[in-house]
Length: 361
Image (cartoon, rainbow, N blue to C red):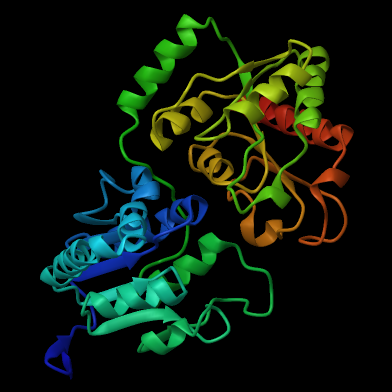
């Protein structure tokens, strides 16, 4: 039975649902199980997603979505910096809000949980605005929601995947058996296959030394990545490719230089999906708390995650074949305190686990 909210009727089972998660890459990836849960629960529903342009690759073209709203954050910031362009900015913002409202969403899931998430939840005009309860969001975000979700195990550290899934459960979807699915990787697999074939690359571990510009404290020293690559080849017979993204080539090259010839620079990736295809082919991923770490988890690559100032119980890889290496209390360590020995031991244990799993099939 419907109930009225303002001029719109609220349906207990919404037919048109918008998910809002604008940034960051790792968090956008961690909303994919929520998207899948909603699609399984409501196969006939119209599902939309609002995301910033820098994270669009894992959302645009997703088979569970009917509509994607891409916020051109970089362009808007450029327009905002120039008063002569403010009218154009106003027009683009109005057009974006108009696109949201034109979809007449019944419900919006604010997975962003901060001020900009609240703005989008209000802007779309959905009568049901579902967000996190006070204490589980930032910047007074809860004031914009009219339905509040308290994640399970509120006093414990909860992984972001499970926190996001709590909003799907609020709508009646099942949070069991979380599933990651990316847009079609066929073209990316072909590109990366050609690039690796041309470079005559065989089996490899993917080492990712980079982190976001705000995540310098989450970076493991490049010389230790280089030392790890040398020991992986000498003790495990596994070569390494050093992956890199925009602005990270110099960092990746420093790892290669420190490896004594045991690591090579990975082929350039033109998109997040190219990187996903590259990580999917790897026997092992090693990196810090970054978007690529979550991407490796999403494509089921065995992952060794190096953690310092963030808590791996909340931000670690959501994958059965994983090892977390940290020094000290969870979320209170320093990356420079993680030794090459500790990282190598985790790599060896995970490779052994994968071999045992493969032989038992």
